[in-house]
Image (cartoon, rainbow, N blue to C red; front, side, top):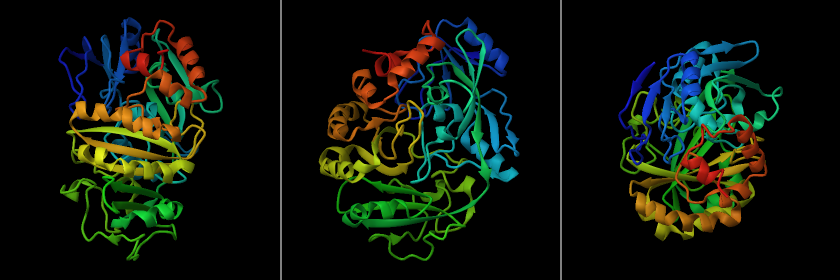
Length: 424
């Protein structure tokens, strides 16, 4: 096991971690020893969170050096990986063996355990977030022991998956897989907003995965990214009009003026799911980096009203934005998933890196979205604490009780959890 005593920052550079020490366990046994001897401890994945969810004043356990073995069980259609494995690494190996995950997030650079713990998602009317693929977890608990949990077998399993790091450190994850498939990605530009909103269900069901990019100003949606299974007759190949939008003639990036060369292949060229479902290529620096992010998940039935509300806030939002993305996510039963019990849409904000200005606008944004029961993404910037967030989750108190049983001394607690989950 190696150790560091230097401060690290998150990927965006807006947050500096406070840990006294940074340890890099290379085996699960080393991780167990580290957890057992720590006063307070948090796991650190790929540092793609924008708040202090992974922070601690004690020890940070970086999972990037854990054995990255990827074990495929072809008979039972699942794969087991270490918690620190990145989705891009896993996707490439699954594709090599002829298998696939059901979806990927925008960035393939994020760690499996971190993405699962915060219910990070991709897109698609019929696609649950990444955590819904979890069939099993191996947790290192506060005493250094191992807790193995399995879907359908372990009591409170649905409360453990989106665990926010509050229950233990995830050493390995078992995910559902399926046969590999091919995807063709098409980008359309300048869709008519009114046509999109009047036909919202038709827009989002037009492909396996659909993303809309906008800065909330003007009468058009900047871009629509449609990722369709090649075997699906609904693929939009050859379509010259998409709700007022026209096909992009070259590779596009979601951010205006940025080259599309870092993005996954477009222009309808078919290829493996592993090279199309994410927005960005694994081999390039993801997205922009010097940015901030927030996201709110709204029930599907409120989608159009919530979008119209945000369009009215353009004068406040647009000057602070690089871009926003709208995606759809299917309902699930994971207690702290923002899609618990409801199909939803994700309203994502990629902000300019002006944290005081962004933090000043978040209370207004959350107040405007409150009538739609908007749940914030756990790994991104939001304002409301436990009093605001708790009532949005029917199993919130059950999760708090579960954390109390698994970590009675609060070894995995930190400022974020005290504010957003365990406060009054």
